[in-house]
Amino acid sequence: MEHQLQIYNTLTRRKEIFKPLNPGHVGMYVCGPTVYGDAHLGHARPAITFDLLFRYLKHLGYKVRYVRNITDVGHLEHDADEGEDKIAKKARLEQLEPMEVAQHYTNRFNAAMEKLGVLRPSIEPHATGHIIEQEQLVSQIMKNGFAYESNGSVYFDVEKYNRTHPYGILSGRNLEDVRDASRELDGVGEKKNQVDFALWKKAQPEHIMRWPSPWSEGFPGWHCECTAMGRKYLGEEFDIHGGGMDLVFPHHECEIAQAVAAQGKPMVKYWMHNNMITINGKKMGKSYNNFITLDQFFTGTHEKLEQAYTPMTIRFFILQAHYRSTVDFSNEALQASKKGLDRLMESLAALQRIEAAADGLTADYAAELERKCYEALDDDMNSPIAISHLFDACRTINQLSDRKQSITAEGLEALRRVFTTFVCDILGLQAEAQGNAEREAAFGAAVNLLLEVRSQAKAAKDWATSDKIRDELAALGFEVKDTKDGATWRLNK
Ligand code: ZN
Image (cartoon, protein in one colour):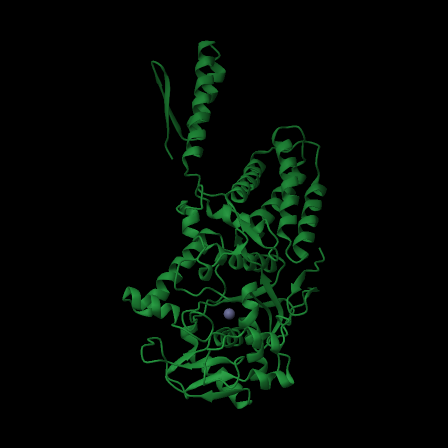
């Protein structure tokens, strides 16, 4: 099947047909977490959005090199250039080595991502492991005349850059907008202009994360790491750079300026951004102090949660919205997602039980489902539309399961393949361990019902039915013991 994957490029503000720079290969960089606290729902969204893209590109046959960084240095409080390093602050408060803090939250982030079914990227570079590359980037920018040293720190000369290259090309801002928005106190006395941003910061005496450099003992500016590591692992030009919409300005805008200033040409062909998760209409995030961590969702331990929500429910909740729309958190929405997910999982299980007939639905049915799902995902990864087609298929699967419709062997094989491919491989949804009490209770009730039917059969001297139930249960691993008042059972598996 001929694919024409279209993705929305934030840079050109339109959908474009995806054409990788190197046919058959895709280089993709996504901004990862800053590891100084537990991952929350806001972190799940970019992780799942770009996991869907990663899975889909691989499904389409591309060889994908997916780089997602771990930010373990350099993000300062308040804004990009000011305040205390967030990781260092946590380390100071908890009397830990900063790398202990970073490792602890990296481990917790990865564990949460695994539960969400997010595939590990090809490379997960740490900012602290790439200080030399960041210093090389800063040197290159200085050599080309777009940065200056001041009091041991190095700043990017935005005014000068803007004379020959449009600064604000990604966010659609002009220099005046940026000037108006910048805070008066940032880097006061050091910067030529308020709009300039730090490439290297001289460390204050109390700052514990610090490295030697030609300019001072200090640490790289916020935006350097992604440019430096993107170039190192994906080359001077690569296909996709992604992240949350909140990173468009200043982070990604500054990345573009850094790359152009260093190498004379842009680094990224397609910029992709997922929208935010909101809670009562406000962005959910650490800086807003209104976030719910993923572990709190999984355990139901947050005052705003009416119950626990499984990782797959969270994943499905995020996939049910197009990645460029906002998603508003509510218990009702999550409960609806749980129902939807259950429908898909029940159909997945039912497909294995359905038996083929001599006539009925042919492979054309699955081919049409496949075509529609591809069409949705090729249209800028429209996962909600793809899911609606899969829900239509659930209705058909129910009818097949209830024997209100029949399907040929060829048709069944094709439907199993297409449904599983989209639900499990591409959307990344999996049946979860059914350890919860409700499921266990339903399971037990069903076995008890069978044993009741068996005792009725025995009472009616219908030995064939009674033996059949006993033998088949035994074959499934059930040990049934007859007692005076009926029968007891246990599962020996
Ligand atoms: Zn980044």
